[in-house]
Image (cartoon, rainbow, N blue to C red; front, side):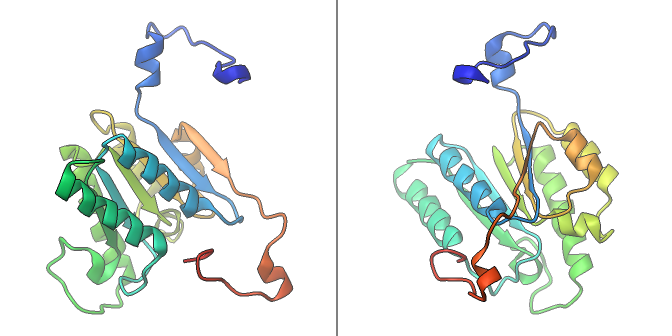
Length: 204
């Protein structure tokens, strides 16, 4: 793509502007570090454009908190106070699903994942968000908790201009085929190879 120019211009009857404004489905996969980090960076860009941001974390416990959550939630508050940027919602599986009637520390992770996906489908239909980040959503699909064909069909049929980013290892081939943008993070070298654990400000 020299100087940002596509290598191929499809004969689809669309103008350059129409093609540019099509919603994207992106998948960040692979065994390397940075899949979620890249997605949250995209959320910062989207917030700056005034987009409505929705983050849904499918493996993280509601008790865990990462730095990006604090930053994006503060930006959501800034939007409420000044109108700058866009609104932000951040949800985690289980008791972190704020729409759920079930509270507490339930251990039925499969039911939590199914409930989260059902809510996301409702939000896609209602066009609640401009950018949805489904963090670590590849795992419930790989474990058979959520059907890959159903996910792909819902994403292909989503109305309006809703961008969706899905992160996690071992992305289903159907998901990769449906995506407009696929990035595979490949580990070349990692501090854990030398016995060094995660660091504040790097991993959370």
